[in-house]
Length: 138
Image (tube, rainbow, N blue to C red):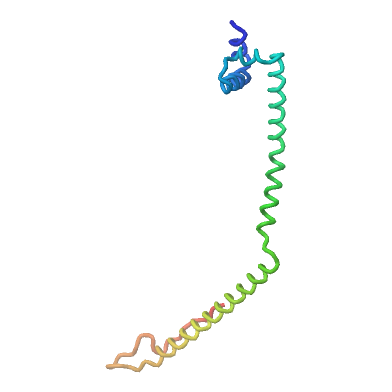
């Protein structure tokens, strides 16, 4: 078994990374490592790269927490925008109250007009004189 086959068997991730780096330089693995003064430098650099990547992954939760804080601060409206929104909400509430009052008035008028229907042809209207239990909203 050659040393490259043993490396591929014992450390497949390292071999894969080495093969990819050699392929990017359009060289074979022995030629790629042969360009270096000491082939062990490649493995030392690879270990340093992996440690840096692990450190970055360790910082990810902290970065996500900071990003969440930034997002939440952006979600809070400025004072002038909050005032404008509050005024608009108050206007909508007033319009809703007016619409409900108009609805209650229309229902009351309708109930009174039903009660005022006279007998016709000897028949009494089904709703005439009935007590209605319509209460105002709210």
